[in-house]
Length: 251
Image 1 (spheres, one colour):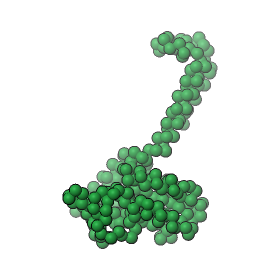
Image 2 (cartoon, helix red, strand yellow):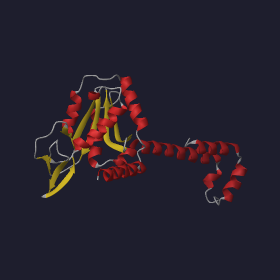
Image 3 (cartoon, helix red, strand yellow):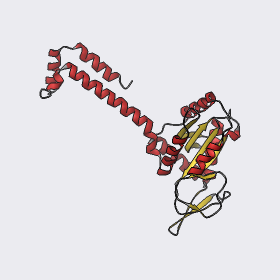
Image 4 (cartoon, one colour):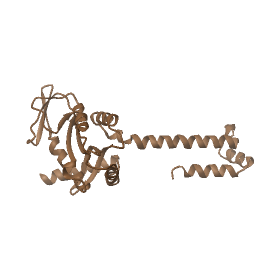
């Protein structure tokens, strides 16, 4: 539909004669643009402009997700798409799903014939002190301590949302994963389900037992694509407001 106005303009220009075109251009003070007095030249300009608009539109639709990713998430997206490609794998980034008390936002969902990987990405530096049972982990950077939410617990909500949406799959086919993409050093033992980027890629490659057909994979992707909210600033603002309401209720 975006190309319809240009198409109508081309049809219009095809029916008007040279004299009418000259009157049109004089009315809009185009006398100095002699090129516009040639209908063929106008047609070429219109076609070129439409083509550029079409290509830019496709580029923006394809890469718009990148505007909403941090460096760690973008790094993971590039690594995954280089190593795992369709039709056996399909990566969805920055997916916001509606849940009972608002929305939940998932960094990445890697859908494959060998399982669905729900990925929480953290791009951290410094030292990390982590315990899977704790509600928060600690980052030490230049001798300053920062507490952040346990990403395993954070990702649990994401996994529940995906399992509910893909309820026709076995529960264990939807797998939670936390990936550390930064240079952080764990000062406690690395926890099951928490990986460096390269370790995560190897972990995915190790799963070679098929849990769904290619048709079922495409159905999963279709359901996720049609259910998730639009990737936009408005969606992000709605998600942040839902989090604020949830935390106020918890208080």
